[in-house]
Image 1 (cartoon, rainbow, N blue to C red):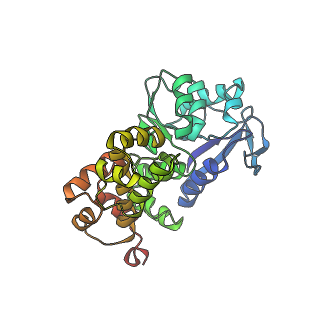
Image 2: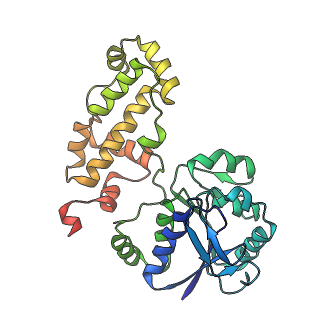
Image 3: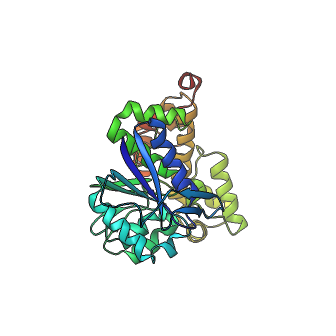
Length: 319
């Protein structure tokens, strides 16, 4: 039984703990422990109480830890100032085979001096904080998880389950990880290279009626012609005005926005239908399958075929 130790603190994000904990526990091959600054009840930022059987003073950091997982949450900003907790993480990491963080837990890894020269990720809202606090690290907040040597880091909340599944796969093989994923209704795990950004996250809300009109047209029919001239005509603006106002209000140029919306439509279709990639490309405005494949890989980080394999939810796969 390999020992996985989770580090929590007051104000931790409950899913950062419970999601990965369930993944490891479900295999029956890991001993999972929770350690906190003090043994006893620890409250998540949602108010959920969790009992940590161990405090940092009674769990020897130098013995028996295979995988160290440091969770995140709103309380991490206070936790990084807890010298006893940070010191325990530093000592535990020295003997552990691998060290992982979920979400803003990476800040505790940084406080423990574990990020020098490491490529890491975190929740997109914490990106600038991590960059500022730890310039010694290479921060990349596009992937949902990143492995750099024995240091693994993940984006926020549910991405911790993807990270845990990847760790299980590294230990027990692909079939074991897929079994856990299906039993937990995660189906097939997301690869670490998949972007943590999708339309609901990266898009802003239009501030004006002309830009809202253009945006609504793109979402309503992603496969229609949405060149700069087409969008300008719908918005009642000149092409120059549209380019300037759209970029200012949406945070991305019109062409880039249209491509991202089409990619999101392709993701849904790949997961929910058996429509061939070539047909999808024509229907969604990419023109050719090769154009779709290039855009999909550039944005999502995997090929359409790989995405479909992992996320297919048709009757055939549910059976």
